[in-house]
Amino acid sequence: MCRLDPAVIRSVQKFQVGESGDGPHLIAKAADTGDRDYETAIRLFVAEEQNHARMLAEILRAAGAPTINADWTDAVFVRLRRLLGLRLELMVLTVAEVVALRYYRALADGGGDELLTRVSERILDDERHHVPFQCRRLAVEFRRKPRYAKRLARHAWRGLALVVAIVVAVDHGPALRACGVRRRQFVSDTMQLFDDAIATVFHERPVSEG
Image 1: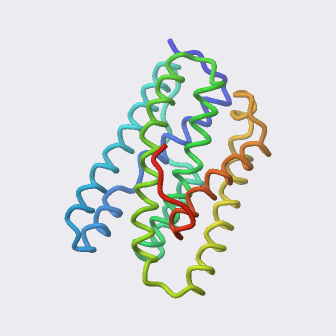
Image 2: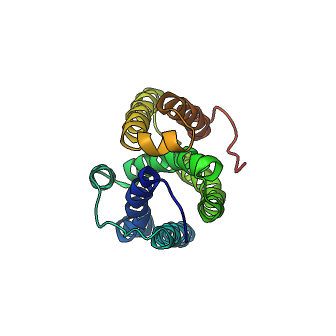
């Protein structure tokens, strides 16, 4: 039996929906690039995300809680990702992956349950590779863009990341508090992680999987 704070349960239910993902749509866009190696990598990425959803569902089951079918934040993310082409989808997806890094760190450190800690650490191991994977592809996507376009994209992307971090901090605030993380700390830590990621896309520092 998994003993979780009710706020953590509600939060995990929402993240489980998000981890279920929009795999076929992303795979189709990757296939359109004509790069078969990249398409294969995206298929593996989607499989890992689906495995995260499966593990979170097992945690909920162990806690005696059901999974949910939808959440408004996931619906917004899916709509944003589908607006344009692969580049925008990866930008939105990378924001979600960076938020996940801080979120699962909070669960691993303060969730108060051994099973939750083990699963969160396992997911973190994957996410630490997912972020540089997305960044490397985005660096390719932006390589031939003019400097002004890169500057605009960088500022808009960071603005989106800040809005998302704030929304998650508010929406999952009770769970974060139960894990010993304040909303402001969550936003600050997430933006620091995002700044590290965005710098790799625009070649301000090397990509790292650490």
